[in-house]
Length: 148
Image (cartoon, rainbow, N blue to C red; front, side):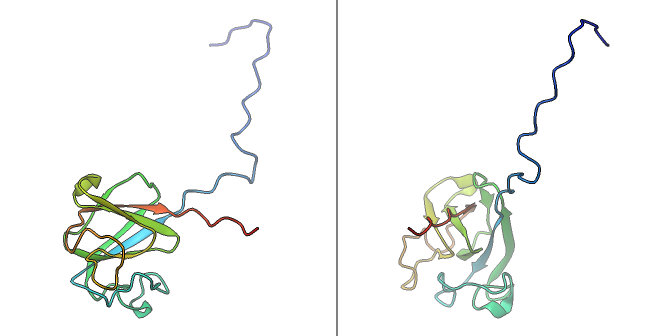
């Protein structure tokens, strides 16, 4: 349908960003769950490369790997987990919040790195306890402030 009114149509709106300046997609955070493990899984250690069994304890698909790798780009999404979690390996630059019930319910604990949720002497942070985590959410950590 075309209406002739003598007024030219308005120009199209500009794009929401300049060409070549599209916003970066949200960072992807990844975590892996491990069961029946202890202090052999060091929360301060890093796996290199990610998911490789040669990267150390609780890095690959051996040593208690529960068969689940969780990936998220939405920090508000809760992901249900395997039920025997003792250790959660989190990709560098990401944190994890765990809950004792599915869908983020129950008691929650937040960490800025991998975590041995059983506690033990090698994990000084408060933890929910062995086999109690039922869901988690992953989120990117804020970059450190620039040096002065």
